[in-house]
Every structure is written in C-alpha cells, then in structure tokens.
Image (tube, rainbow, N blue to C red; front, side, top):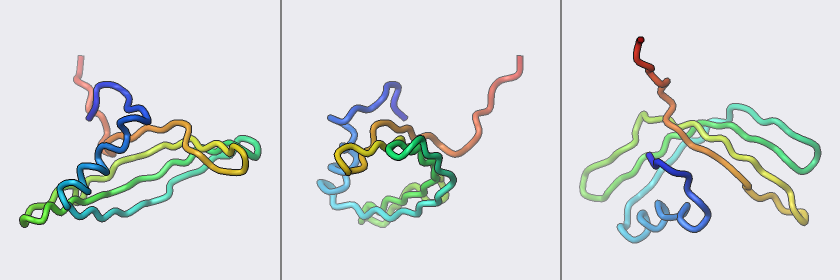
Length: 97
C-alpha cells in the first residue's frame, strides 16, 4: 500500500515488474456498480482478485479481493480514466476508545 497517490508516470510500474521478472498474472473482475453523469462521465465500481505466479512454485494474491473506483471521461470520442483508487476489500477495524 502506498502512502501517497500514484500518478500517471509511475502507475504502470507493477506491469513493468511482471514483464521484467517473467511472472504470470491472472485476474477476475467483478462489476459492482456504475453511475453516469451526463453523456461523457461515468464512475465505475468493481472488485478484482489478481494472483501472481512467480514461476518458482510460489504464488500470491489468491483470495484477496480489492475494490476499485475509476472515473472515466469521454474526450474527442474516446473514453479515458481521469481518476481512480484501489483498496483492500477487508473492512477497516478501528480501535475502541
């Protein structure tokens, strides 16, 4: 988990890591909701499970679902993500006071 938001310049680092290390990635997407704002802006919510296979007999991510929100905007007839977030699916457990 990052302490600060990722920007376009470094958002693809995880993809480069997969390619450079020759890992295998499988994923499942579960659509949850969509909300349209006019004809050119939508907010999409979904859950995703992605599993890394490192090629040495180890794997990670199975059973860990993350929740995503992406805001899409149509510009010049093309849809682009203009904002988003990802977080673990587990509820936050706040301490009792």
